[in-house]
Length: 125
Image 1 (spheres, helix red, strand yellow):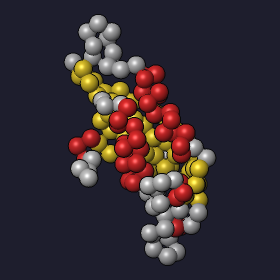
Image 2 (cartoon, rainbow, N blue to C red):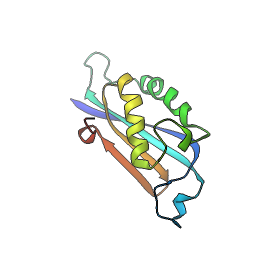
Image 3 (tube, rainbow, N blue to C red):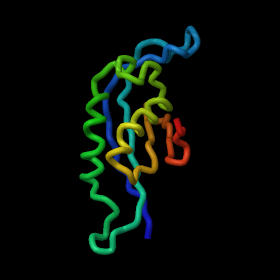
């Protein structure tokens, strides 16, 4: 049996979206209580009854989360234009090497706005 597991994380950060049109509210400096969730997929181990321990997910993600918490995202290497879409891929590239079962990352910048990036949509370059 294959299942997916999802664990959620949060961080506080400021950013601005410099490529938005003049006058767009997101072009100005502002902050969010960001959230993101990490989903892994795989077979349930017959012996343990789990795919992966949630603590293993947290160990893989926490160093990356700390890189973003209470930062100005535009100053983080690779996030000069920190849209949710770019942030999702940035997270993927840093988490997936330590979490090969990764199947999706969802970035939430508000309680009503989420960007989902699935394994089958990762660019090859």
